[in-house]
Image (cartoon, rainbow, N blue to C red; front, side):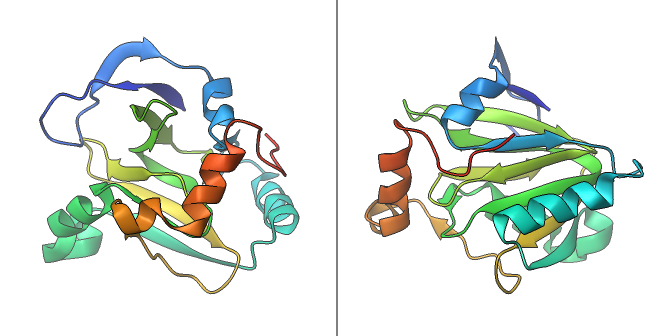
Length: 184
C-alpha cells in the first residue's frame, strides 16, 4: 500500500494522480481506515481473514473482478460508477487477491487521499467516509469483499441527503476522538 495526496488534476481516473506528497499509515488511521497486509499465497492468509471476519462480525463474503474481460460492455460504466464520490452505511472491506487499484478517501480538510492497493492489501473503510475507487492503468483487480450481513453494495452518492445521513454524522463525530475497535 502506498498513500499520498491526489494531485486533483483532470484526466483518466486510472492514472496515478500522485501529488508527490506521501502520507503515513497513521494518517489513514486518524480517518478510521484500517490496513493489513498479507499475501494470498501465504499459508496463514485464510486464517488471518477468518480472524478479522470473526472480530469484526463479517458473516458473508464474495469475490469481485473488475476488468474489461470480466465485465464486458458495462466495464467503463462500472468504472465511472465506482469513481463517483459516495459513502456506505456499512464498512467497506476489500482484500486484494490480484491486480492493483486506487481507493480515494476524503481527509479532514476534504482533500482526496489516494491509497494504492495491490495483492495482499486488506483495507477497511469505516461507514460514513466519503470515498471512490478505480483500477489502475492495467484495468484489472480481483478482490474478496466481506460483509456483516448479506453481500450488497449500496452506494450513497455525496449530496445534502448523505451529508445529513446519521452514519455520516456519526463518522464525523468519531473522527476527532478516534474509532472504537480500531486495530491494525
